[in-house]
Length: 117
Length: 114
Image (tube, helix red, strand yellow):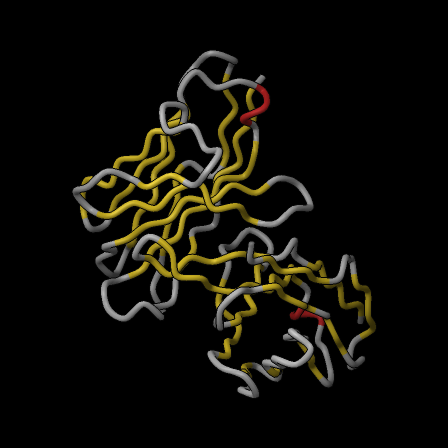
């Protein structure tokens, strides 16, 4: 099956710094990638949708200046948490899908746990 | 808006026990329904899906039937194994902004003991 990787798997940073998380589709081209956030014991919440070469579409309530998304190629999307604060600590998960019908399956990465001190 | 509600965990079972994880949904249209599984340290994997009412999704001994009348998609397995220990997420799709997006339930942790 299709494989999606994320890097890093774990990151600890100081408050005020920026953190970049990478999401890669390893064996397929992903025209669309999704970024989710998961709080402990809660469901995954969609943050934004990105298409290769275009601006990301953010869900209501998600600050686009806070969470910068760049989908520079068909195999790589990055999420940058700018000026991170402790409330940004969470589990960030990406998924990727290929072009095709609207019923395409999303393939998920293993997630990145961010802890802001 | 659309939403998914699933039973809280953890669910603890002995090997070979029968499993049911309840999932109900609220949707304005006719969503597709999914169960995803997340094994420790891994990403979510699609377990099964159903795209219309009365469809039954099945995989690896797990089954779920799309019940429109009760807006449910309960996950069942007749005999669980230790290797089934994971977190299970019920989800539905809705079409918005040109994309097929997923809404997830909170997840149910299953622990199977020998």
